[in-house]
Image (cartoon, rainbow, N blue to C red; front, side, top):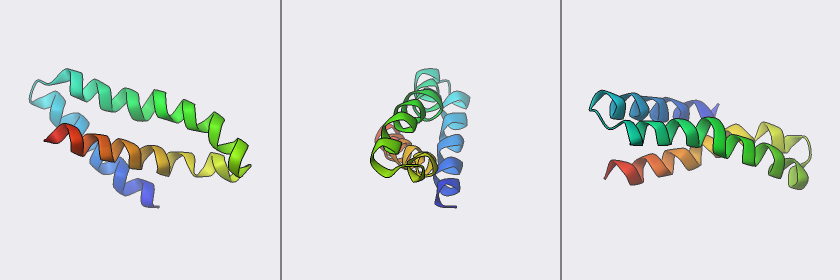
Length: 74
């Protein structure tokens, strides 16, 4: 459930950056949350947390992307 808050903010800012003609920032957010971090953590976290590592991947990815978005925003 906490991943939905991060997901909402991340998607909002991805669309926002695209709307104000900053496609590099929008693409960075999309790639970070959808490809890079997801693939990285889905392989790393299960080695430490077992099957639960798969389930906590998305909240962690959304939180890290959330932090990056707020660094980009400023």
